[in-house]
Figure 1 (tube, rainbow, N blue to C red):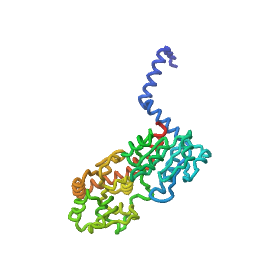
Figure 2: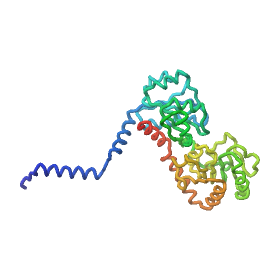
Figure 3: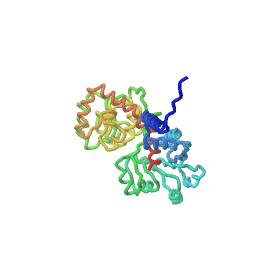
Figure 4: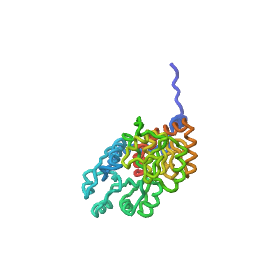
Length: 341
């Protein structure tokens, strides 16, 4: 038998402090991290109601996708179609968050009055790819939070609609539709151009006939009919097939959904520089950026010879579509903003 050794109380306290400090150093959690952990848990106590007027067009599936992702993050999530007086039935759902998708809806006086009195946090996730308007400005002013597809419109909503919380949050691509797949031979091309044939790119377009001689070039936009060396796609063309069939995609359309759709198909794209790119993409890593027509011409020549680099950028874009700028991540950002601001 070994003799029992009893430590002095002050020694016991000292040893206890040392052990606790060592445990904290092994897996430290500061106050901010602890708060974030608490917020993630709180999401599971929330109920969210998604409302949208869409049943056709470009974003007809968007509300369903958002609701599916919300169900992974909150306790309950429902989606209903907007109709006159729909807010009067809001109380049967008793949501913590009301999220309106899109801006193609006219709120009547009764709906506007109810929105202004709701204890629920309200947000509108706009589909303002083509810019804003007086009508959209008026709709945005009814909500606590505004999420826009275009970062340059943030000052417009903040000052013209008098909304304090305005954030850039584009819709991700619908990966059930935009994903890598074999392209039909009729959809294959050396170059796919997204955007209108505008005067600024006139010289560039003319030079393409020499630079890409005997190569197939498609264009999606207006004003391409006079250019015999470029095949103009119909307005209702299934662009997913052409993204997958293109060796290189040039995007000066200004429509940000093309950026995410191309990435989701694993396509290599050269996009005209604009501020919204940098919130989600990393030029040179998952997208290539050009600043003017001369820069674009040089980039085409450069990347035509850099096959592996081009493939790497396209692969990184596809991975980003599945993780960094997926719909799940976009919805998580929306929740985080609405919960912390």
